[in-house]
Image (cartoon, rainbow, N blue to C red; front, side):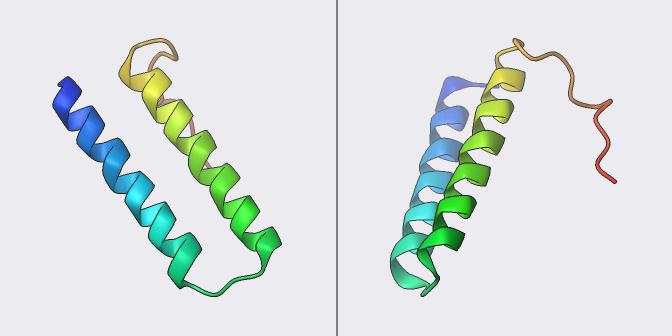
Length: 62
């Protein structure tokens, strides 16, 4: 994955999370949970993109 594409994806995720946090009224606890989930998913995605996590194709949810 090219570095520019990676940076653009991170900026889009960051802006979307900022918009959700600022403009959608939610309880503070729900916002914290949402932020933690998004950060964990982005970190896993980055580790996979850089080849440090290995392939995530074998992971099944449900």
